[in-house]
Length: 131
Image (cartoon, rainbow, N blue to C red; front, side, top):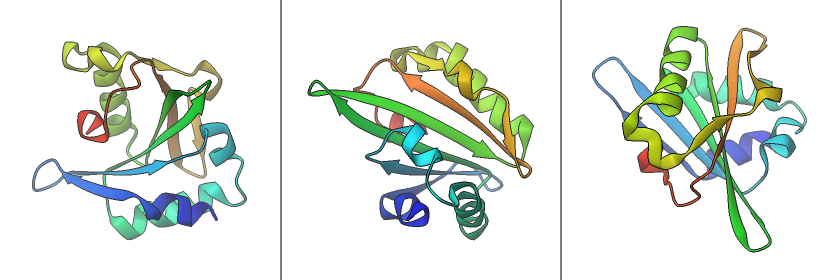
């Protein structure tokens, strides 16, 4: 199920007393994850249960034995989501990740939850580097 995908490999990173980031790792493409039955409802419920300010799903699949990584960011606070996305796309500290936004998923809001999806050009970037 979508909920199982989100909770099997999940970690919370505390930013400060008021902010936290939750990251799930999945071995599935973002397209397949987004197509799962009731995915948006499951993700909204999971975010609420974990009480995080920003939620991400790191997806990895293998094409011709090479890792392909994608990142979905979601949150109810558009400013937090867009600030983190801007950091990944433009900040020198994130340049090694080689992040590019998927244009087909840009500006996606469903039921009040804003999502943005990215491709990670450097497959060696880890969850710790994203957080």
